[in-house]
Image 1 (cartoon, rainbow, N blue to C red):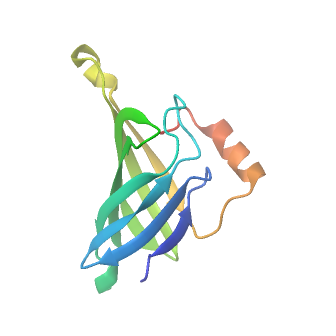
Image 2 (image 1 turned 180 degrees about the horizontal axis):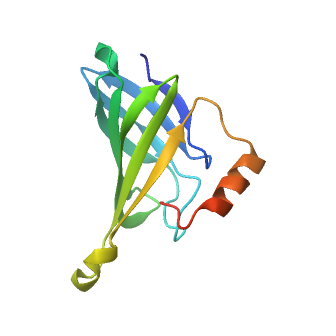
Length: 134
């Protein structure tokens, strides 16, 4: 399956997969949410997949640092492509004081589709969340 192109999660964040070559993924991520308002602008995406050889697995990550932001955190997604959706769990790890390492990593799930979600759907999903990732 060709996974290149534009994807959106249920909160309106944007994942542009620019290239898949020999199992490696490159792209750009723009978040629609940020727990501290830190993650502004576009962020590089790197990852791996077996979709270019007939599989469904995909994993990618973002370091929340660019010319506009330095959030001292990273998010990694891992999942699979099914029915033209990327269903993935994410781990967000924030820099913390060593005595607070127990709270440095959060987990959640995203469903990426090719269609940008409508504002009312985003608002409903945001009300259900405890704490969004960057």
